[in-house]
Length: 135
Image 1 (cartoon, rainbow, N blue to C red):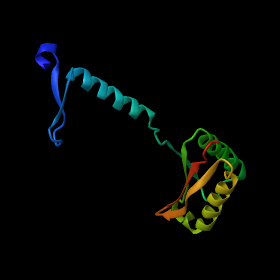
Image 2 (cartoon, rainbow, N blue to C red):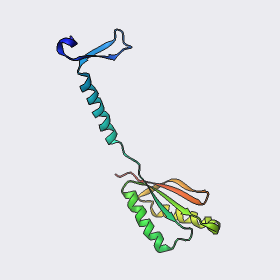
Image 3 (spheres, rainbow, N blue to C red):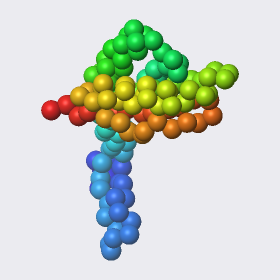
């Protein structure tokens, strides 16, 4: 019958008893399958991570400026990686760095939530914030 209609005989499920086959245009089937996969891939969201860097003794004006940028990133739906970088002997101010990151988390509480609390890794203390879901 497939030769008569000039189509392909495609085996759908070989494990069934008897095996299920279908008469169709196989190239068209592959094209539709590829198109469906592409549509599913387009719907998936890509996670964007933005970074903001502080020093352990960041001034208040600089802090406000960077906080404004962090707020914009979270409103746009990107995740935020805020970190304090300690240079040389400034590692002795790690408490100040932690206070700075916790202050940022508290200031951005209405737009984002803390995903990971501040952790010291080598010479940088890192904290992750994720945007809150929009209602």
